Image (cartoon, rainbow, N blue to C red; front, side, top):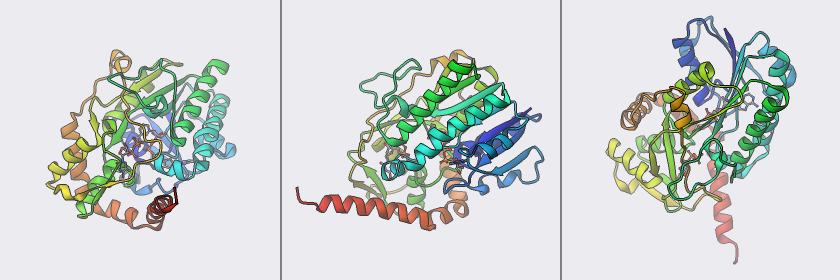
Length: 342
Ligand code: NAD
Ligand code: TYD
């Protein structure tokens, strides 16, 4: 079978392609990826020479290239997105173009190609902040609070509409915060680990009491592959990590595992609209028969070890202009707003 993966040069997409080619010898993968700042051919360097893998450099919002890349594919697994909340606060435009418009272009092409499955990869952030001890189920309404989450919620609605209107066999997955190898070092977990490795401080937003549910990327991609085989069209499946931690707790977990002093954690002003808590109920996926494999502690240790052994992967990303500009912009924005008269 030939499948189209979008965003396969990114963090989760590259882990998914590696998992698929290893576990499904019959499958051929076309990877449609624009290679934005987050897309990195190094993430799949180990696949060079594998005739079952082919990368098309292109934009999911361009119908012509999407049609060509999808030709002959039986399934689509759609990861491509602008994915970082902080960037969406500074500039939502690319989030609307890729996450909303790009998703519709893919859905239209999938209908023309009559694909047998379209997996739309989404996030727990579409449910918004969840108070108390509740966990979001797939039936909950969507209350996204950041431009990123709003653009993903819009794309979820479009994916569902393609199923309801045209019978396109769409399945939506909504996962919690991922961590693991090849995650761009702007997200909390790799930023924390690589800053500690460089003896730099980690900026903890606000009071550090925001809760996230941590999911190892290897469990996430295995769950997506499982849903591709066993999931029911028109359904939504939550994929949680079963490891809810306050940000403060996560930092001290990582710090202790890496033997880092508490002085390397710096409190900084909070992210605007910072969601307090995400939590997923994923009993529907478990009932479908999926079994998670990685306990949090083992996964975290593997992840820290990976970043320790791969500075040649993450150092150039941290040193590149784009990364520095982004943080400088964010810093300047904060100093300006702090110095304004009340
Ligand atoms: P990422 O930012 O690491 O990778 C995104 C990839 O998409 C990059 O390779 C980039 O080049 C590509 N891309 C961006 N715009 C494109 C365009 N217009 N055309 C083609 N390719 C384009 O993202 P990620 O963390 O791997 O997330 C993948 C998906 O999983 C996203 O849809 C995200 O919303 C979802 N998700 C992520 C998490 C998480 O914790 N990272 C959790 C739940 C869901
Ligand atoms: P992030 O990895 O950006 O994922 P998301 O916001 O999509 O959940 O952030 C995870 C949590 O860590 C979130 O509560 C924000 C917080 N955070 C920090 O405290 N400091 C940071 O430098 C970053 C990037 C995130």
